[in-house]
Length: 459
Image (cartoon, rainbow, N blue to C red; front, side, top):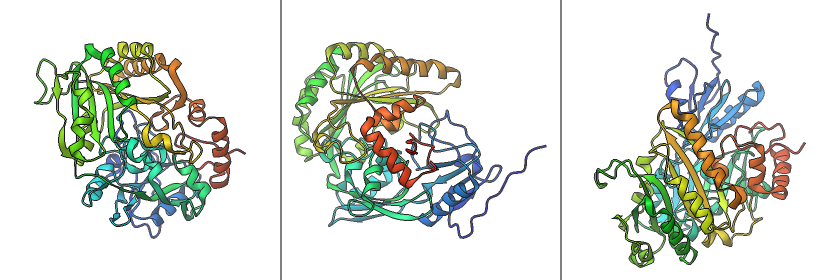
């Protein structure tokens, strides 16, 4: 006999409820990361903040696990749970642009592709995800790294106000003037203090055409290139957005067939200033003699979508990330030796420079810190065969572990996997972590919002 499924009723719920065995349930529970296969008791796809309140109240009153699916990648798996309630924000996609004030009011279920499409109609942008299917919620709450960060700051630096559903079912506003302590914690504290249903974000003049694209080099030049790139970004102006990616060449028409599937090094560029000034800014990288030079004036939304084909939904993923105060020659030697021999053709090891506007925000201005880090390296392993999971995870851990001696000790919170509570604490440092635990005690004393990079209450 099979156990009967409890069908939850939420009076007045405007969205859609998905229960095990019902239409749409299996599709609703699939995440970007194909490693995650969980079966919640109910998925509540919310249409408004009131729906979120109803779902939170249900989980709290029935003492069920509560997960929050913002609509993006959720690689860690925290967006889905077994036997509990999933607050699914993908039904909340309204966005309003005030072009004069340069402000966007965006509901939490939007992806960055949807956000960019709306803001670019006004020639405006905010730092956003490097893949257009990234959700705005998880990125913003975990800090928010993107191509424009050195010019305009991180996503959390551009957060002006947030509408939040709290653990006790209230809808409150968090800003510098209202519930300022909560506002401080939301900016980098992940989903620990409530569910943000609407973000008010500061926008900046950019686009619709920017100078951007990609340079591609042979992998055997890795040490030479990463050293040159390190020196280039050290003195680059804030407008120079970029990252160096150790990848395998995709099976695209513009890639010679003999190179497809082979390790290569790509530099993605996005100039956050007048497009006419971009070519000169990246000339030192072009002078290195790339095998492919695809830098050109192009739509900003096209730059934002450059990495989309390499990040499809459904592959198996294991990610981690670290900050580095510097990349000395020895560190580059160690990194390149491993990053150029991937065990999967889909993996991406991405070196992202810091500096610029990121470093001009006070370390204690918000929960997210690590403002002076010179580099942030994302270790993104992806593969398709479940039988190869152990090999790929081991590779990621070996590569990132080989670089630990040079890390700042702080982690990139959004990418942490099964690395333990100590890594979460280390992401903030002891003083800030203590302040966050006190904040958690105030706003979520029973740790209802615990399926995340969790900060437990102090008591």
